[in-house]
Each structure stands twice: as structure tokens, then as C-alpha cells.
Length: 153
Figure 1: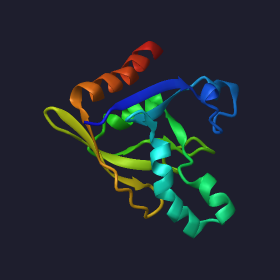
Figure 2: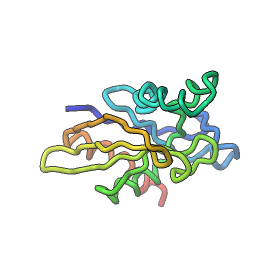
Figure 3: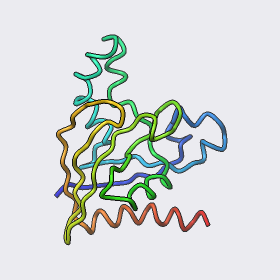
Figure 4: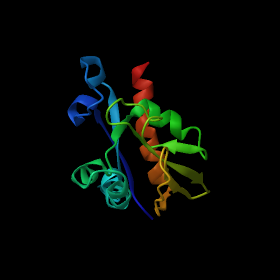
């Protein structure tokens, strides 16, 4: 089984470019780690061949895997809608998930939760990623987002 971790910090502490105003810097965001590795670092080498085809070679490496962390509240709402496509990131410039993100399908079984069918929401890029988390691990991480929701009210 794979291991999922949602690390919740503020947008300001993370250095999110889209958090360019003081009130935005206070928004809790989620770094998604799978098997102790930031998902953006997993995606970067997969995207690099695609970005090299589309971008100047001098900027292609910086562009691959360049995503902003999704706000905790938004990820919580996204995960409530599965098995539809779940946005995992936001655009690093504007902070919108619909602008620039990677999505996946979430499938729940009796004992596990699977993330697969990863795709870019604006490019025809294929990601051969498939993760299976124990239901106990997955639900514990999602509860972190729920606790955040309850603390905001």
C-alpha cells in the first residue's frame, strides 16, 4: 500500500505566488505527499518531456511540475465529489484549480482508496500513476481537512 499525507500550512509560509495579499497568505493550503514525496516532485520528471516539446528549453525544466498548493477547503470539497475528477493543485500564478492543475479519479473500495487516471486539465499529457492507500490512512488524512473546516466555523 502507498502512504498519503496532507501537510497543511499557510499559503504565506509555503511561499505561494498566488498569495500576493496579506489575507491570502493566511489561507491554509495542502502539500500532498505520497510515500513521503511531494506529488509535484513525482509529476515533474513525467512532465519534463512534454514541456520540452512546448516550451523554450531554458524554461521547460522550471515549468514542469510547477503547481500551487490547493487550499485545504477546496481540496476537502473536491474529495467529497469523487469518483469525478479531483483537482489536486492550483495555478501557481492565479490560485485557481480550473486554470492549471492535475486531476485524478478517486475510487473507494471496502479496504482501500485508489487514485488513478491522472491527467492535466488543459493538456493531453499522460501520467502513468496509480496509488492505492489503505482506507484507514486515507480517511485519517481527509479528517485533517474536515477538522480544518470545523475550526473555521
